[in-house]
Length: 263
Length: 278
Ligand SMILES: [Zn+2]
Image (cartoon, rainbow over all chains, first blue to last red; front, side):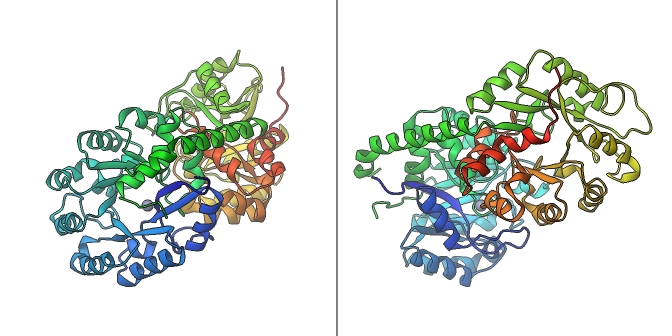
């Protein structure tokens, strides 16, 4: 194939309040995708949606999917504090094209990942064959709420729902969460890791590639928090075989989110 | 996995290798000069590993980076004097490719040991960094004015992590010393949440620059180059904590002219550093 081929498995769109970000919309994301050989991006929700918004935000993502000619797939957000409502919205979204999975964020939603508040979400994902993407991180002095998203907390669900694919975003972060994330991805067929965010650690791509089965690591940008360029070159230039790069940049996302990229 | 993709795999891998090669060649031709490489045991990054000078040089060269301004973690973790001594020792035979960024303290009350502004300037010293928050002094004229005058006189740029400063104090200092080159570094947490202050400061104070290792928001390099000028941005890798290809990749792929990329990758830092004295 000669066109764009990369899958950005973790992006967002929409206005941000807590930092200056002049170019955060779907049109700007698409312009960068064209520029950087990115065929398709998974939109894991706007800031408003992640922070407790509901149906209208989901509808906005669906419209962006349509307007993009299918290049922006999207994830619905499940906030356990409004769980029943969220599932009702997701149930509707399942019947329409473009929904690629469900995003959860234990840290933003102030709910430990193992909390029973997530039970209905895992059952729903199993019934509808949807992938779950969750924020994951290490314990942090600077932000104690990160402890709610420690990778080990997800293990109870991964065991109970082996049919649900779980992607741990940020591969457990820059500290003690990393080893746990790697362990989960090695021990459980249904656990994947993405590289989104500023886990810019030296030789991370090389070390994760060495530690994980070849189908487990996904490229993600976390646009607009980060420019897709930040994580793209380090994968292209990593000291790993071209086949491993191809998997990270495309095939693994295709498997983890069951994407049909034939267009 | 579907069959069609498997059939495409060899073609895609060839494209990936071509993209990688193109970037590697571009990186070399930008003549990168890294503003942010470190020796010693990293503090606050539990998974990062210390590198000795030869390994650091190899890692830099592996990314096409020609030279680096090098700091020492002991300057933060132990004491500025300890970091400066360790740096002088480590860089003794390292040659022109590695220049030292010393750690400083206020000049009064006078403290012993190797410090910028006290005694003779060490060979190969190219810049000075302060850690006002960690070393417990305010970033104020009445505390570090004397040091800033000395830096200005010796044409040494002043480096500061954004997590070590408060913005109103830095603004006052930049206004008080308009001929002092100040470099705001985007470590040790991403500067994203501080970028309203950073960009406003840079607009108001032409002597303020930004280091780019974590200036990673969507198209920030292009935006900053258009609004503030490419001469205000300095490539930093934050090696060995970070992968240099992150910061280099953002420059390589940025929507900037070739000349602008050259400035950001290394020529701006070359311009700011005083001549190395043999
Ligand atoms: Zn995200």
